[in-house]
Amino acid sequence: KATSIDLTEDDFVVTDVGYDEEEPNGAIDDVTQHILDAQRELVEIQDQIQIVKAEKEQLKRRLADLQRKERDAKMSIQTLSTQRAVATLDWTRSFKWDKEVNEAKEKIFGIYDDFRGNQREGINCILSKRDCFIIMPTGGGKSL
Image 1 (tube, rainbow, N blue to C red):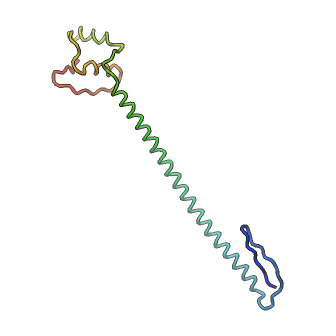
Image 2: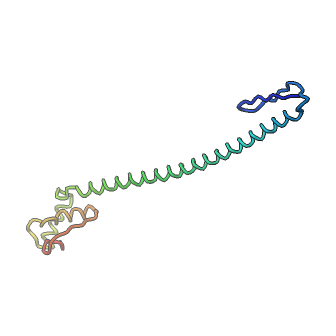
Image 3: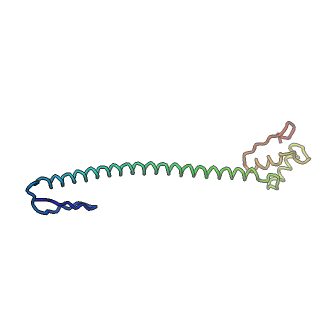
């Protein structure tokens, strides 16, 4: 009895086509070989699936790392923008404490002249609760 094998995507179909007296086991051997080939191919595909899954996990980790770096960069840019905004504030303009500062300058320090360079800016910056770094020469009025 001979056998015909039709392969499809999902399975294969074995069809009897009659009896072959010369090779009775030949058709069975063919089917067995096709089964072994299909099993080998299935193992190869499963191996490929595992490789793709590992690559997917690696890409997920890389994406998370890049998103973290992007978030950090945006925060750094925002911080720098804020720092620039503070640095560029006009510290010579009027502030709500101007009157008290002028009175203290006159009553405590006995100074009736205008502020020296950067004195008023430094006082306004400090009273605004901001960090302040001023470089002034000796005798520039740092103690005020």
